[in-house]
Every structure is written in C-alpha cells, then in structure tokens.
Image (tube, rainbow, N blue to C red; front, side):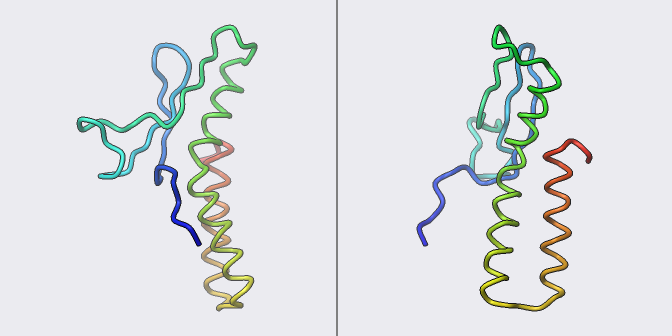
Length: 105
C-alpha cells in the first residue's frame, strides 16, 4: 500500500472574517512558522452558499481524516476478522467522527 500524500489530521474549522478555513492542527507535521497550515478555504461570497451550508461543508471536510481512518480500519477488520472488542472500538470512533462531521459534537 502506498504512503498517504495528504496532510495528516486532526483538522479543524476556523472562521476568519470572510468564508471558512479548514486547518491542520497536527502538532508538528503541518506548521508554518508555528501556525497551523490551511488545508482548504471555503469562500462563501457570491457563490450562493449560505453560512449554515458552508459551515456544514467545512465540518465534513475537517472530519475527513477521521472518517478515512475508521473506514480503513473497518475494512481491515472485515478481512482479518479480528475481535469483536476491536469492532466495538471502531464503531464507537466511527460514530464520534460522524457526529463531528454532522456538527453534533
């Protein structure tokens, strides 16, 4: 399997003066001069996206590393048929990631 090329999580949503940013909050991997690096910018001006939809999009984007992690672990579990305790942990973490993506946590 090839090594991932994306900035590792966790990511977070930041609300600057205009639009929304998704930032890397990894402690050491993606800092630029001591500041988190911007993963993506969502410009809400003139594109017909209201603030609520823009915020929902940003939350979903910021949860992508966690969602990918739990999906990958679930696939690995299904092929390896590991313990049910491990499946319970993956399922709990998937729920937490989903809640974060949906703005419920």
